[in-house]
Amino acid sequence: MAAQDAYEQHHLDRLILVPAAQAPLKPSDVQSSAEDRLAMIRASVEWDTRFEISDVELRRGGVSYTIDSARHFRALYPQDDLFWIMGGDQLPNLHLWRDIEELATLVEFIFLERPGFPVRATPHIPGLRLHRCDGHLLAISSTELRERTRRGLSLDYFVPHKAIVYIKEHSLYRDRR
Image (cartoon, rainbow, N blue to C red; front, side, top):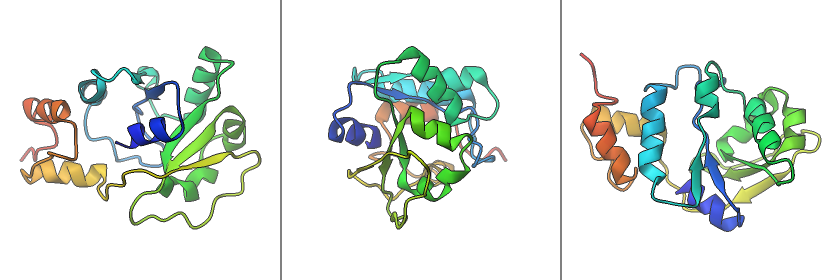
């Protein structure tokens, strides 16, 4: 839903979903294999021609730094305006991102304000270009979705149906006791 909101509101030509191998500021967040996460994304959007998927960070492995992916996409699309879509809850940490001043020259940021994390101030980063995306805000996190799965609660209306089927078929996020 967030990808669709950003795509529509900012009139993007394409939107490439890039699953991280390991987010540097969330070291314990990965709870399924790269293969499973890529398969869930494919299942979720394979029918939608507006979206593409890149496994560049998964193939690279290790900690995924946005600057590395931005350099990759800048080389692929040297004449295009590039945007990085992120949750507004990440804005206070943006100054911690690797090579943020170079990153600010390579991409513009679209941030989605998340419920419970109103954007109060934007970081002072030279050249930073921020665009707000007002969309359909869901007050649910990936952590909460995994917990719903562990507890046997439905993911319907939170997650695309084909991703739910994949999660069930592969017994993802269940207690392994």
